[in-house]
Amino acid sequence: MWARLEVLRPLFKGTFVIFFNNVRPVLPQRKNNHMRPLSAVTLIILGSCFAITFSLTAVIIVVLVLGDEYPRLQGEFEPLLSSLFLFLGMTVISALSFYTLVKNHGLRYWAQGAMWLGLVGTGYYFWP
Image 1 (tube, rainbow, N blue to C red):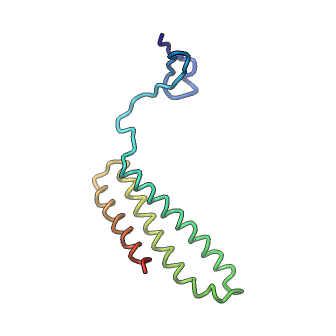
Image 2 (cartoon, rainbow, N blue to C red):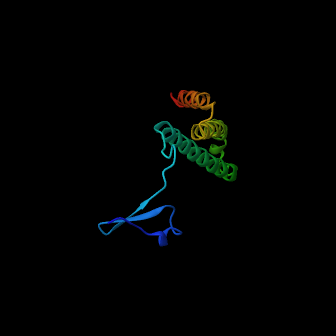
Image 3 (cartoon, rainbow, N blue to C red):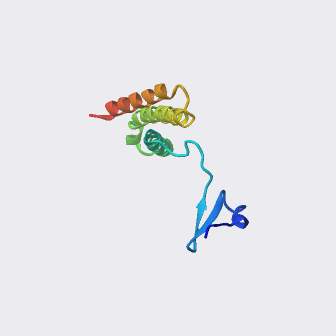
């Protein structure tokens, strides 16, 4: 009833089990092969900060190119630059926090604290 197909093994990691004409992979079990909820939240914050940093960089490039033709944009350069540095710092802190969580490093709690303080500080900076 159970048969292992060793022929397909080079194509995929693990072996395949045939059970009632359904082929499904049987992957080798690893320790801690799951993402913890805090790691997932940290990764969401990292992705958001990276996307905002990338977008602000693109906007600053546009302001630098068009700044001479549109004097209105010159007044927006300093707030854009401060926001870019703020989110660049948040990206670095959240990347460090995610890395320490994944590697189960001893500094993971300090990095998480720095990330959450940075998130609160960023919200306080932009909140009217």
